[in-house]
Amino acid sequence: MLLSNRRKFLTLLATPLALSACGFTPIYGDESPAKQMHGRIALGEFRGRNGFILREQLETNLGLATNATHMLDVNININRKGLAISRGGAITRYNLTGNASFTITQINGGVVHRSSVTAFTAYNATASAYATRVSEQDAYRRLVETLADRITTSMAISAEDWLT
Image 1: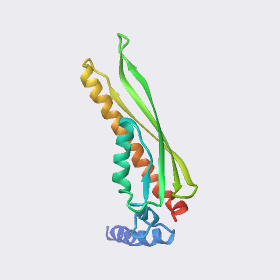
Image 2: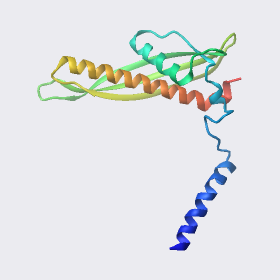
Image 3: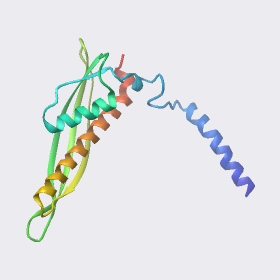
Image 4: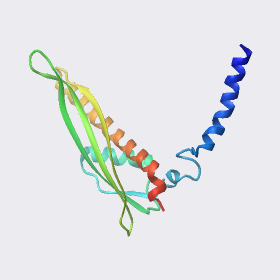
């Protein structure tokens, strides 16, 4: 029993050494490129309710661009598909699938990074039109916020390649 505990203890001690040996570094470390993105990415024009939600979430994640060196433009495409159909033929559940393609350009320069992210969510339709509408709006909000978070993560992962 004592030998087993000693092995666990030694394994816990060796884990940080093994991770540092393989080149692992925290994505949001003190001097990391991902941390340096904060406040340097200006946001392009966003339209509609989904655009407003996207802008809010991106500003929360990236900070207000006080010293912008790059511009982020995003194009969102959301598809809605009915999944569950009642015996009466009414659709009772919808799937929302979102795709956001984004481009980062250097201010006074060219395109430095292009990528896209996807996400999905779902909502239920009920007999109440009001409840269904509220559920639908909430699903769109969740989807767009998830897309914004995934855009931020994708940018953070690749920031070393394009952020100068």
